[in-house]
Amino acid sequence: MQATQQLPLKDIHLPDAVSWWPPALGYWLLLLLIILIFSTVFIIFEIRQRSRIKKTALTEFKKIKQSYQQNPDDKTLVNALATLLRRAAISSYPRTDCASLTGKAWLSWLDKQLKQTPGFSDGPGYLLLEFNYSNASHANDVQQLLSLSENWLKKLPACKADGVKK
Image 1 (cartoon, rainbow, N blue to C red):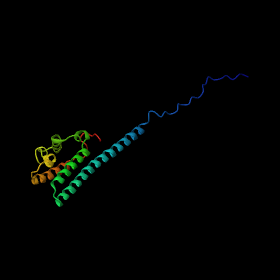
Image 2 (cartoon, one colour; image 1 turned 90 degrees about the vertical axis):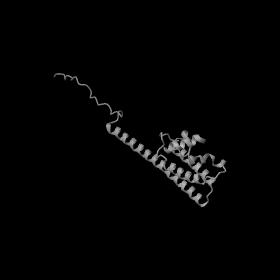
Image 3 (tube, helix red, strand yellow; image 1 turned 180 degrees about the vertical axis):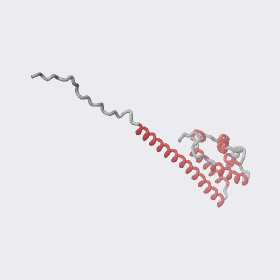
């Protein structure tokens, strides 16, 4: 008998294991969708937070105004408005823009945010600086300051101007 001749066959080669990188297109799309969802939720949260700050400031203004109507004390009113405007500014704008401002620079900054004729630096807003040191009657200016402050609070932005978070 003839010896069986061996065939020149090689071992079976299995394919390499499937690599985890790079992911398939579906995983990239899922990652993009997750990023979009989180960023949308974050933006909506920030806008609602800013509108909540504005709503809270206006509510506080109404309380101050009602308190003034019940007990007309000009000094208390002016001090309360100064405090409210400062708190609203620091909450709505970058802290570096407004927190350190005092005097005429503060009033000019308030006018700049209002974007209309200067009412703080050249109008009744001067009471925020000078009322405690003056003996003159400012009844008409106090009423104008009330309306000017309310107008400024109504124009608070929904988002911070440069997007910087505190």
